[in-house]
Image (tube, rainbow, N blue to C red; front, side, top):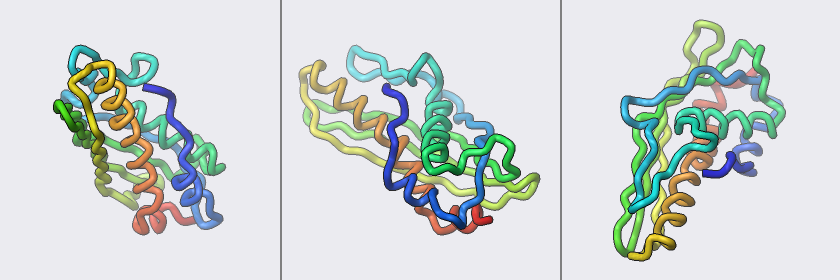
Length: 162
C-alpha cells in the first residue's frame, strides 16, 4: 500500500477556525485485524511493514497536518480501533469493508465515541495481475474515506470545536 494520500474533502472539513488543534493518540485493532490480507496469491500489507491501525493513524495525521490542526501537545486527542477489515475478491467483482471506532478526548473527558464504516466495490478479473492491484486500490482507499467521514461528522465537529 502507498503512503496516505491527501484528501481535499477531509482537509476542507478540518481546516476551519472552529476546530481545535489535535494530537494523535493510540490506534489499535481488534484481534486478527492488523495482520496482512491475502488476495489470490498476493499479500496486502500496510506500508513499511506496519499495521493497518497505524496506517489509519498515519492517514488521519496527514489530513490534520495538511489542515494545520496537528499538535502533539494538544489536550484534544483522537484515538482509534479497527473493528472490521476485510476484502472479498470474486471472479468478476470485489469489495472491501473497513470500520473504525474513533474516540476524542480533551484530557480525561471523552467527547466523541463513534464508529465510521466504509465500503468499496470494484470490477475484478480472474487474472491475478488485474484483480490484485484492483483489490489493493479499493481497500487502501477506504482509509481516506473513513477519515473523510469522520471529519464531516457533525458530532465530531462539535467534539473538536475550540
